[in-house]
Picture (cartoon, helix red, strand yellow):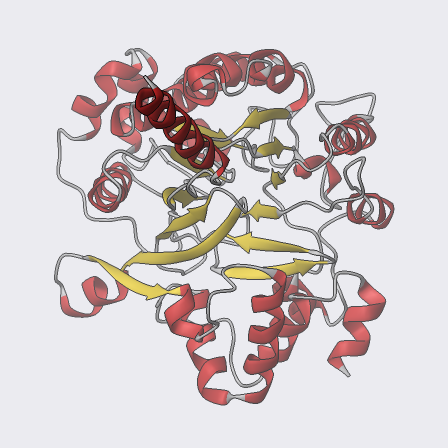
Length: 448
């Protein structure tokens, strides 16, 4: 009896020690990051009427009836490129748990292309076709990644009204929300998505592991935003107020990310062309955006953006910003995407790998373009274990300035290996300054 008691006490002590041990760390996971799809269903304008009159479940058959080469530099994503990109994404991450898409689902100059191809060029007919294109993309991505939680945001081209012209509470946003709600609210990850997104393109979601992600319609903050479909003109202030409130609502100790389409700071390309700094945001809105913080004072852990079509980064005060390259080769860039390794405990990107479609080889040699692994962030820059963080980006910023070899490699990665490089010996400093100097006066001083 005494022996049994001793054994029970020993067992209880052993179990107590086991219970006191810290829980094992969650293993890293991989998520998919893509941007600027700019899918153009009118790449073959003869299909306009058939596509307009067919459910999206029949679009694949219509679009694949004839073989078409990949969209070329200066064009937007056609069916061939979209299917190829999805196939390579699935090859790299067959059952992606999370997929980020940082805006611009619709092609450039969509209305002009519709007017040239369709018999009915009324506003109502075009709006219906834009809605159907958004629904087709939701249908297509859902089939490719049926278990993934999607984190999406609006691009400036995502409107039935025109570039930078999406209106709050519009039928377009309501239809967009209805099409994407099953993907974004997978497993209840974004319960308010349907209502919030239909209002002005904003919402909050919870990622696996507990990180909050705030999707915000930064197009309203652009210096190019117009009020043509928003007669009241209050969208910019309303969206900023919503964003400030959403970030401030983060519980103490919580990790919070943001996804937006247009990044804050300076447009280096336009600044070079115009001879003076060109800001992406209106000045007062940039100031407010940079001031957001959680109730406990914590900054955003990460910002995910697109819009530039290029692979890059920015440092937004105490927050790293990842510029996700585009699928569309419209800016003479190669199509590309990222597979990122996520550290769930730290709510941070530990590393990422870039994959690009070598359109240059196809154009030069007449061969079929091939997707290829391009580079690994940690390996390429030898930044140790810091991951995609402010510390690693500050180190990279110094190395680019000091080392011509690193600078040239970064220039190649910026366009995902395309033939035409925006960053050259003459222009590199303009892009380098834009990585960290977000306001015109600071950028101007950096350029001297």
